[in-house]
Length: 140
Image (cartoon, rainbow, N blue to C red):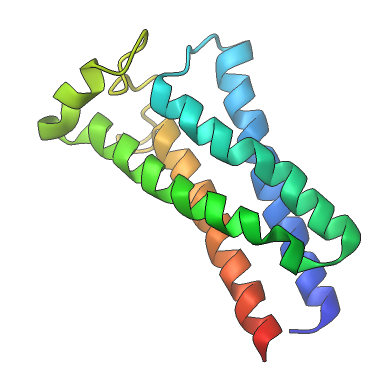
């Protein structure tokens, strides 16, 4: 992949992390949805990605963004677990012990399956897969 394509992919990764961070703030600060503990963990994993990938983009060095690959990989696991707590009846009891807001609470449920953890999981997956694409193309 040539440098302009690398830069374009880095912009997409950075924009995805920024949109996800702003989206989570919209849900909590504008719509008033109180985040559960698993939501907070996902935020802790997502918010630094804006800075990590923004810095890598400005410096034009994808190797600086390796922590982003790790954080997004962990974020995928947390988001999938959170989504399963919301959607899989067997795990819904685990969501009760989550804190002030039960983790199985689904503030949104677009089309019957798109919840906030689903959106976060998709953002983490896009970031992770695009970063792997950059890494793989840089090794050639």
